[in-house]
Amino acid sequence: MTASFPAPLPVLTLQSERRQDGPLVDALIARAFGPGRFTKVSERVREFATFAPEMSVCAWSGERLLGCARMWHVRVGGRPVMFLGPFAVELGERNAGFGARMITRACEFAAAAGETHVVLVGDEAYFGRVGFATAPGRAVVLPGPVDQRRVLVRALTPDAGELAGPVEPA
Ligand SMILES: CC(C)(COP(=O)(O)OP(=O)(O)OC[C@H]1O[C@@H](n2cnc3c(N)ncnc32)[C@H](O)[C@@H]1OP(=O)(O)O)[C@@H](O)C(=O)NCCC(=O)NCCS
Image (cartoon, rainbow, N blue to C red; front, side, top):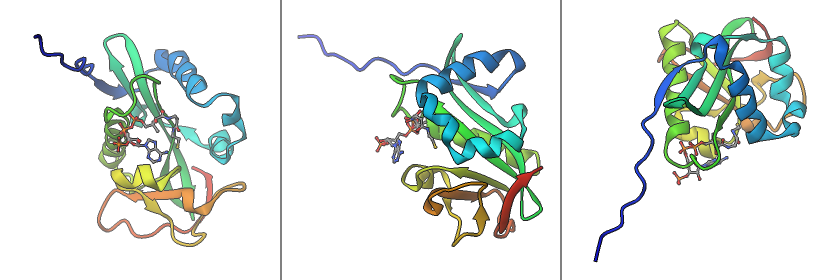
């Protein structure tokens, strides 16, 4: 009898988003979220935020894009803050830890650039595993309706302090 082994995981390369990656990243996001993504409050933020390609993460297996996590410059209560999203892993490649690795790398890029906080809108059940927690009360105010339990913050330094105020352009 021959033993059967699970298919090996792809070797993942995590790197900053390059200009030429844009169309592939956009297509992955469209597949992952569908047209409903344009109604999200995060899209309202991205309409005024400044894209940070050097802190955005693309996950590659050779020439194949398996995941993306985009990062944006905003301000919260006047302080410079990074806003994360969209964040997606290609269907069929999920549940292998790629998403967590991308979030970790995006936060490493931000910390290395001297940023103090990353904010996103998402499920704490997922992002709590990678260091995010719900912003207390209505401390971080998004530019539209949102379930405040989904407004999550990760401090990148021990003395970063708490964020408070509206999310505004950088
Ligand atoms: C969310 C997403 C990026 C996670 O990518 P991934 O590579 O599968 O993530 P990981 O491998 O790091 O983690 C997988 C684990 O998280 C869990 N998980 C995934 N989404 C979750 C969610 N919304 N809430 C709670 N847990 C979640 C999985 O069940 C799995 O659990 P397990 O480790 O106990 O088996 C991927 O599911 C995806 O692209 N989803 C569609 C787009 C989306 O919802 N993006 C997030 C918007 S904020």
